[in-house]
Image (tube, rainbow, N blue to C red; front, side):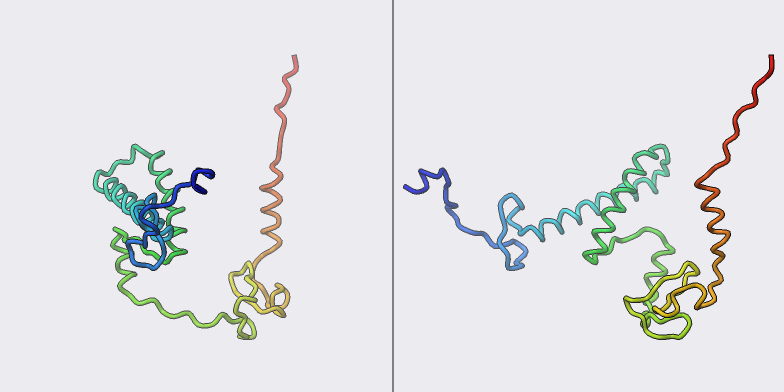
Length: 172
């Protein structure tokens, strides 16, 4: 009688576990998968479509669809960001990247100050010269920075304020 008043109907079969046996409950809207497994499946399908279209473009050598390629590249960038977050790798076609993948990645050591070699970790400061420094050596005058701030400032001001000349008037 309670169900008639509220208009809610109970599920006749009850809760269904995810088909990937991850331990969570799935739904019929997600093909009996939990939301995480369903998102992973959709991500893999999109990556497969992009890979197939990029291989097709490489094989056909078509450069006429530059708009399609740019939108596909933008979609690929967004998906690679998601893939990096989930640590999913996409197979590539380039021979140069396969050679790099064959070499094992060297483990990076702890981040250290460029001047005093002190461990900085997450508190390091990145300078414009490209080096990492601790709190006491972060200023350019403390670590003898080779970066030319004066010319960089001049270039920035020149780019922000272009010279505007009016056309000369012809006398009648």
